[in-house]
Image 1: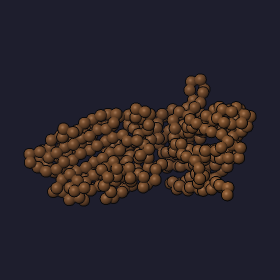
Image 2: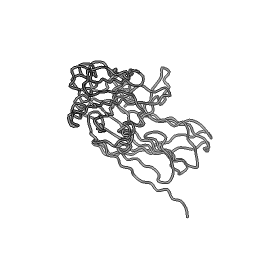
Image 3: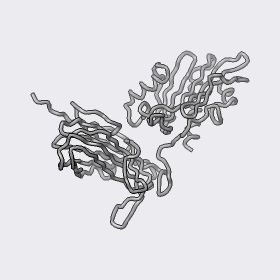
Image 4: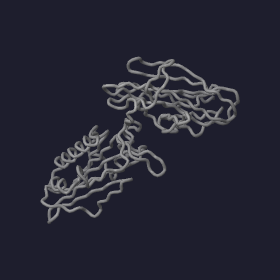
Length: 354
């Protein structure tokens, strides 16, 4: 009995757009978010990368930042029509290939989806000149200011000698107030360092006193500020009074907390693991992109996943900024502790978004 590859459609609904990703049921692997390698028998790929394309001073283009999400900021100019240039953002993919037949072609189909125009299809070919070599593909979207978020999708399905080779998907974002010629704006917020959790407007001595309803507080010896990794600030009530409050700001791997890429169950599992393994009392859509409330004894904890990008770690992996807040107080009811933590987190999100 011949093994038959079964193709299925994975429909993922995003605000204002339907993204359709085609993948085989029986073989293949995900090489990065948005890139699926079908493991064909006729050609092999390596060093696959897709995302933003940069042009150096000599005019040489390459994928400079692997990404599934592409934000159109208009940082370059592109020829849309003869003698007419427009601000644009370039993106694409590249890979090395081996075990191919010289003087053949890689055949690719491209599907673009827009909420306004629906689905549009076209095709193109990539030359395979030798048994091994390199393929690079670059395209662009022109920049335009928008009043509200617009999300588009673009999927490339490439085959060789009749076999599927790779499926490459891009989610394309136009954001209000982001981009424009020469703006240098980034679509995602970025923190080069973790904010100092013990500084204003975060957990100062006055804030800790107010949250614990204490006349005096003392900073805990475990408080520390490591700008490249995390900042932890802890205060305890002084003079025989009860209670402790703490903020922890940190960079964590994007692969664990990318709300746009990971299933909700995986995000919940990772958040639970990061907070000691107890199941959350409640999961909220804000503050941040996703928030989790935990309860353990007299302690209420709020864990917030933000959309703020952090600096990359020592081996070049992308990181997200997350914030954890807790109050441990035997004389405060859980609802009160939950309320003050949410109030603090919402206030901080507004501060960061400014």
